[in-house]
Image (cartoon, rainbow, N blue to C red):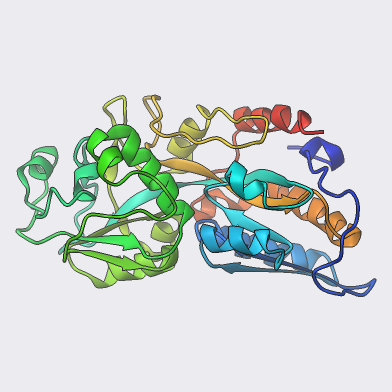
Length: 342
């Protein structure tokens, strides 16, 4: 990937506005906030980028996509992260405009905690949405047992763990569930926050790490988290049946197969709600870095360099941390779309 200067569509470095923080000629501090979904990867990227560039510090706080977008609109940060990109209404609140850059991608897994840690739990396409509708309440439910004849599933209540904050992970997850289940679409819908069914066996925790910790601490729990968190904590995660009928585990290969089907618009927004590929993992998404089109010139220069690092050098870290390296087909789509924003 050889993205440099205008080819990344980062024409967001134009006229200067009042800087967020006063910086000397030798020091630059870029402050960001938002999505927890890419936080482990962003942390590694930003630390390495700062190390490679003396006097430059990149500080990112994982607050959740909703909080990051609000910080971005309020101009209290230099950039933000969001798994839900931004809506037209949100973009309209940013004077001078916004550039949305899908610098990485990941998968959402259903992590679970069962006695004995049984591996390769299979969840059919028409079953896992019902878990989040509260229609399936026991692990030995006949529909789960039928898909897992080789596993001894306990007579144990299912505790469903949800996000308590405004979350891009929730946005992507509910978008998928609504696409595959009409009842879910009508009763719950999609969004960074939604009204889940009321149940004593549905609990909520903040951010991806909070949901992950709650699952690990709760026997019988299941919840939705970014794959990197499952990989980092060695949490068990289910094989999900995709649209083609195949049971697929989250991986760089299955995630890349999903992203290859993405249709990115000229604004670089696009979601894959229910991929049709035989090898595609059902729930994968880009996650966006949000940048101002107009920004303090010095910070804008370093934002260009930061984005270039993310989409070139930084991609080498993706797979090992549970994220999907941007596949060439998607990079081509991003370049084409980016050129239209010049």
